[in-house]
Length: 345
Image 1 (cartoon, rainbow, N blue to C red):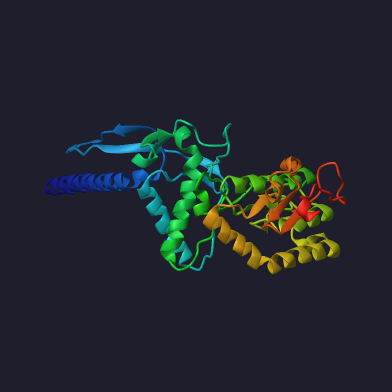
Image 2 (cartoon, rainbow, N blue to C red; image 1 turned 180 degrees about the horizontal axis):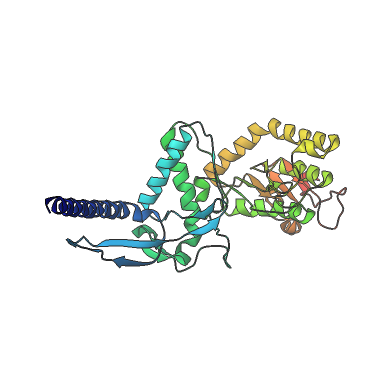
């Protein structure tokens, strides 16, 4: 009897210990969730009250986090409309940069999600934004600034890591003011002549919208470039404010030396030309910083009184003395004629 009773007492003690352990864990979770809930977007928030055998716990609030598929797999999304979330992200970036990283690329930050009709998160997701951003709002209210706020957080984290080094952040999504924090590229394009021709007006329009540091994926992101296409694109793209090549994983290699010696030499000459003009381009960036004038400007800037220049989309200016031109649709890859300003005629 004593042994059995002792056994019962021991079992009962174990139950109490397990129950107390559960209480401690739940209370710790409660505090952790309250600290972390500002970091993630919430969807249909609700509350649970946990009843434990020995009594009531404090009210614990749990929320469904947005979990959506992106490149790494299931992802959650920081709520950058809150300053606390931006500070949290900046601290992560600071630690990352301290390990020797020179720049950060914010991709898919519209935000984009897979397996969704809209390719983005539901419009009725809830942001618990700061008062200056409108407070608690649906995603439809905050969508356009999400990418900019992520870029801002990344920029601030890089400054925390090294106050004396100019951060380099590249973002796909932006908004008015994002030029203060990041460069922008024109998104996923295709390796074809139409997208080469489109890249010039896209860069010019971004410049006129306040983003001076932009450029396309030279050679195209999707599909396979040809030597002629890649060489022509590098020839004009080397003079874009932001110059880089980028292609998806299932395409052929898109390095200049991948297309034969002739294309490699064309690309080498184009990039050498850019390096020779770096002091001039850097000066244009300073002017953009001071006055807001784009680095690459439309051709009509050379003669605003000439209405025929208003529709020119295959050339652009780098300052008052340099004009750069490419082919136009249906003209053929060898022909490069454009309507030049009289001063350049």
